[in-house]
Amino acid sequence: MMKLSQPGAARVRAPSFTRRLARFLTAAFALVLVNAIPVGSARADAVDDVLAKFTTDRFPDTEKGIGDLAAAGYAQAGDLLEALSGNRLYFDPIEKKVFFKNAAGVMIDARSGAKSDVDEGALKKVRLNNAVRTAMQAAQGSLSLMSPDPARRRSSAEAVFKSRDAAALGAVEAAIAAEKDPAIKRSFEYARAAIIANDTSAAENARLNAIATLRERGDQDTASMLTGLASSSQGRIKTAADEGAKAIQGQLALWTQVQNIWYGLSLGSVLLLAAIGLAITFGVMGVINMAHGEMVMLGAYTTFVVQEYIRAHNPALFNYSLFIAIPLAFVFTGFVGVIVERCIIRFLYGRPLETLLATFGLSLMLQQAVRTIFGANNREVGAPAFMAGSFDFGGLAITSGRMWIIFFAMMVFALLQLVLRATPFGLRMRAVTQNRRMASAMGIDTNRIDALAFGLGSGIAGIAGVALSQIDNVSPNLGQSYIIDSFMVVVFGGVGNLWGTLVAALTLGIANKFLEPIAGAVLGKIIMLVFIILFIQ
Image 1 (cartoon, rainbow, N blue to C red):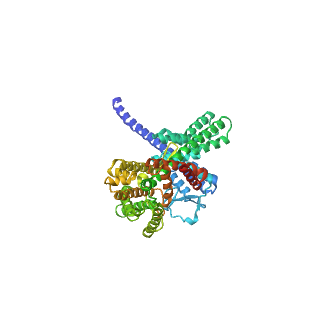
Image 2: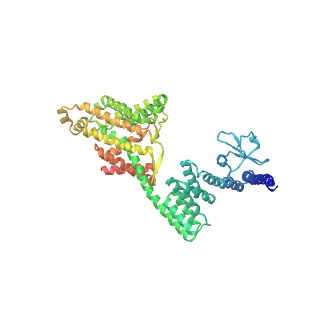
Image 3: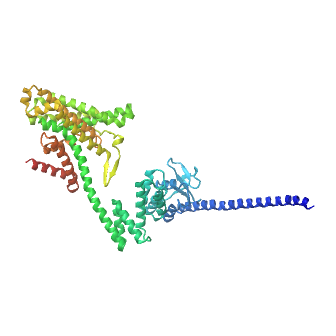
C-alpha cells in the first residue's frame, strides 16, 4: 500500500508546485507592468507640465519651460526651440495646448508631434524678451552638445560659453568626457570655465582656476566677460579677473597690429598687381599711360565673360574659371596694348604731355565702349570654392581670397623677373631701355620691342584685373580706382626698378592700413602723397 501511495502523492504535489510557479511569474509580470506604467505616465506628465508653462503667456514661465525641456525627455525639444527662435511657436489660450510651425510652414501639435489642422487665428504666439532669448540660446546649446555634427557641437559650446547658464554645466561636463576632437573639447572646457567663473556659489579655488582657463582663450568676448566679472566681484576673484582682462587686452592690441600688417600686405599685393605692368610701360619705356587702369578693367571684364560662358554651357568648370580667364585676359589686353602702341604711342615717344593727353582720351573711350557693351551697372564675378571662406591663424582672421591674391601677386612678379632676365626678349628689352641707338646698331628691332613691351605691360594689367575682380566691383570705373596709386607705387619705388616697385607697393599698403584708423582713408592717402613728394625731393 505504501509503495502504491507514493506515486499518487507525487502526482498531487506536482500540480501544486506548478500552480505556485505560475502564480509567482504572473505576479512578477504584473509588478513589472504596474511599475512600468507610472514611469511612462510620469514622463508624459512631465512633458505636459513643461508645455503648460508656454501657455501662461508669462515670460518667467516661458523661461522656466525652456530650461526644463531637455530634462523632461521631450523628443522634439530642438524643433520647438527652433520654432520659438523663429517666432513660430503658438498656444491655445482656451485648451492650453502648444503648437509650432515647422520650416515648411506646417502646423504641428507639440504634444504628439503630429500634423494639426488647428485654426491659426485662434492661437496666440509665445512672446519673447531678452531673458527668454538668452535661456533659449543656452537650451539650444545644451541640446546640441552631443550632436554628431562637429560644427554644431562647436557652435553649441560657443552658445553655452556666451550664455554661462549654470543649468548646462552637467551637459557640458558629459560632452567633455565624450569628445574626441581636441579643438572642440577645448571649446567645451572654455564653456565650463565660463559657467564656473560666473557662479557665485562655486568654490573660490574652482573659480580662480576657471578664470585662468578663460585667460588662455584670449579673445574679445572673454575680455568683456572678465571685465564684467571684475566689476561685480571682490577679493581674489576681482583681482584675477581684472588681471586676466588686462592681459587679454594687451594680447589683442598686439594681434591688432599684426592684423594691420596682414591687411597692409594684402593691400600692397593689390597695388603691386595694378602697378607692375605700369612699371614696364612707364618705368622702362618712359610712357605716361593714363589708360593703364582701363587695361585692368578689361581683364576684369574678361573674367566676367568667361564665367558667364561657363555658367551657360558647363557649370561644372566654374571652379576653374579663373585659371581659364588668366591666360585669356593676358592675351586679350596684351593684344589691345600692342594695337595702342602701334596706332598711338609710337608717334608720341619723347613727348610726355601729348602721350598723357592721348592715353587719357583713350581711357575715356574704353570706359564708354564697356558701358555700351555691358552697361554701367556692376557685374557679378563669383569666387571659386578654393577662394571662399576664411580661417583663423592665432589671432589673425585670414580670408582665403586675399591669401590667394598675395600668392598670385608674388608669382606674377617672379615670372616677370624670369622673363626679363632669362629670355632673349627680356635681354633685348633691357638693351633697348639702356641704349636704344646702340641696340638698334646691334640689329635689334626697337620698334618691335617697343610694341611687345607695351603689350607685356598691358597683359600684366589684364591679369591684375582677374585678381581684382575677386575683391572689387567689376564696373567701367574699376581702373580709375588704381591708376593714381599705381603711379605712386612706381615713382616711389624708383622708375624702371621692379624690385623697388615690390618694396614700394608693400610699404604703401602697410602704411595706409596704419594711417587709416588715425587719420581716415582720404587724409591718410594725402599724407602718403605728401611723403612721396618729400621723398622724391
